[in-house]
Each structure stands twice: as C-alpha cells, then as structure tokens.
Image 1 (cartoon, rainbow, N blue to C red):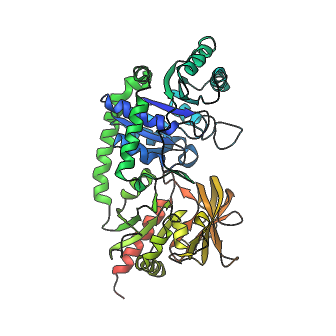
Image 2: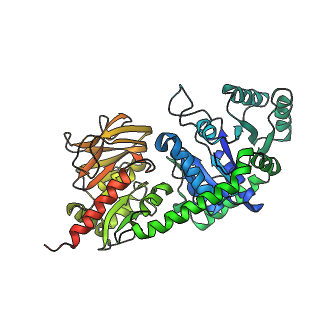
Image 3: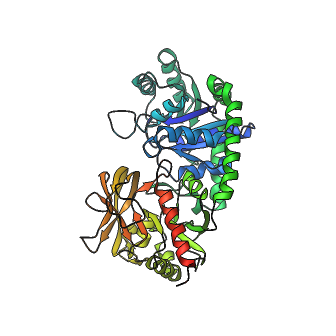
Length: 479
C-alpha cells in the first residue's frame, strides 16, 4: 500500500489530552521544517479546526463506519501526498469503537488499516506505579496493535515521573517519548459538545492556543518521533512513488473537473452558528457544482443565481437571538423552500428550520426560527450520541427510496413535531433520530435530519446536486 509515514495519537480514555498533544506534535514537526498533514479519527467537526491553525492545512476525518475501509485508505493517501508526515488524532480510548465486541471503527482499527504506529497518551494524575499497569494492559490487550511509544500527561513533579519510570523499567519495554507536567495555565474553552469551534475564537484565544502548544511541544522527544516516522519501511520506500502517482491522477482529475462543473451554484451556511462540515464533503460537492458560503447571521439576502442551500451542524442555540434578529434571511429561506429549491440540512441546520429554539441554559424563551417545519426545538441537557444507520423509506424527497444511509448523531436537543403523524423519510435500525427511530423531516425539496453523513461512498451528494441542476434549469425556462 502506498502511504505517507504517520503516527496515531491515542488515549486510554477521552479527556487525557490527545488534542493538545497532537497539536504539539504537529507544531514541533512543522518547526523542524516538515510538512504535516493532520487527520482526526472518528466523527468530529471541532478538533480538526484546531489542527488547521497549527499546520495551515485542512484536517480530514477518517471514520471506518462512515467511509468504509477503502474510504479511509483513499482519503489518507489523497490528502497526504504533498506532506512529509501525517499526525492522526484518535477518538475516545484506543480500543473504543462501535461496540464492546470488536475494535471496529476504533482508533486501533484505523491504525491497523493504515499500518501506522501508535503513541499512547496516559493521564498520570492520581497514580504512579499503576501507570505502568495501565500501559501494560493496553499493550497486551491486542497483540497485533503497534503501540510504539508512551506520553505521560499531567505529571505532578520530577519525583512523580521517577516513580513511573522505575515501574516502567522492569515491566514496559516501549519508550516514554513525552513527559508533560501539569500546567493549570494550559486551558481551552469548552462547551457541551467539546471544544468551542475555532470560528468563535478571537485572535487572542488563537494566540493562546499556539502558545500552549509550543510549551507542550518542548516536553516531547521529537528525535524519537522522527525515528518512528522514518523507520516505516513501506512508507519510506514508496513515498516518492505515491506522490508521483497521485499528483498525476489529481492533475488529470482537476482538468476534467474544470470542464464538468456547470454554471450552477449552491450556498453553504458558514458562520458561528453553522460550521460542522467534513472537508471531504465540500470537496466532493465542488467537483460537480460551484460552492459559495453565506451567513444566516449577517447576510440579508440570497443571490438569485443560487440553486440550492446546505445548512450544516453547529450551535444555533448559542446565538439563537442573533439568528432570530435576521428575519429577512429566514423569510427568504422559507420562500425558497416553498418554491421547491433543494435544501439539505443536518442537526443544527434542522434546528434552524423548525419554528423555534428554546431551553439553552434553562431559558424558557422561544427564539423564532425559519419555520419550514411545523416543529419546535428544545434543548434538554441530555446527550444523544452514536452512530446511525437506516434507509430512505419515502420517495417524496430528492433522495432515492430504499437508499441505505450511515451517519452519526451528536446533540443535546430534541425536535418536537406538532403533528405526531408527521412523515419522516429515514427509518433507522441504529440510532435515535427525531422520534421513534425515525429521522429526516421533508418539505418539497427540503430534507433536514439529526443525522450527520459523510459523502464518501454515499450517493447523497449526487442526488442533491442533480436536484439543484434540475431546479436551476426549471428557473430559466419561460412560463
């Protein structure tokens, strides 16, 4: 397999510092003159935005459930061809995947698919010799998983570190490649779904992140990391061939794409409220149609040559007051939906298209939203999280009936339809959806669901684009 050398940063659990340490690795390698391609394992929209500011490259998600094994391999190859190394931030704990029976869709699974070594991050707080037992268990749990190094996070003192090193000396043969001491000044802004999205941070916050990462990087053994990277035999011998092969393929595809893209465009909502997009999804759409961005907060109109809208996930509940104030754009979106313009919305976009949003931080006030759907959104404080799978059971939308769809859901809200007999287009065999295992509200050519999808290996983008092109043609036919 043609691959670029990479390292997977895994944790024993969530919250052990994977993001910070991944960023520190990216920063340190960049400062040494290497081009680093970042990746995030699993269904995450926020962490990749932090990768972007450190590497000045678009981070990509690698998710076996959403993309399939070949999708993971293809995305890794394509997006790292002009890099020297790749750093992959893991998801949850190393072995946490779709269930407790296997490694499927876990960080360990992706590392195995790509044949990449793992750096295991262990939070050393409240333990000393026991840290060695934790490391031993992770190393032995699956013998075909390549844990190449350990990073100890949140060390209390040099004495604390010595105890752990003494325990490792006779029990753990894998090297410690990072000693990160507890620093209360290293903090990040968080919210109910994790870190605050990068788009909401000001320049001072961003500078603080870079400063934090620089400080952490000083405690990582980059000589050892570079040794792990350059010792990846297959990758080392094939890197030039891989770059040449995919560069030629991309240049040919780019030339074809220029000829194929029609003079039709869709608008993608992108601002502080809506910013949960997989970069691969945007790239896939842009191969067939023109993409432009707009803000439901700041813009007052939608260009007349637009043939479709996409409203991704995000945090509309946080600034629902600002969305409500822009009634002009909401009225415009409602009018376009009435006229049959194709609209595709996920999670936050679904919430925005209901009649109201209420309940954030306990407020009872209902903020008026677009109102395409006769339903209201209420923040509950209860997390709905997990992978989803279902099929299209209604042919009233641009999606083809019986189409199998895989995705994930991640929200603290519930959408309450005013009509309990409302028809929904997705029947889920995995996941919660909007109500009773059903998801996907539909009005004319507008589809909105809690389910986030990845377009690699999916027919959703083609069906949506086809619908947009058809709509554009109908608009210019007289009468």
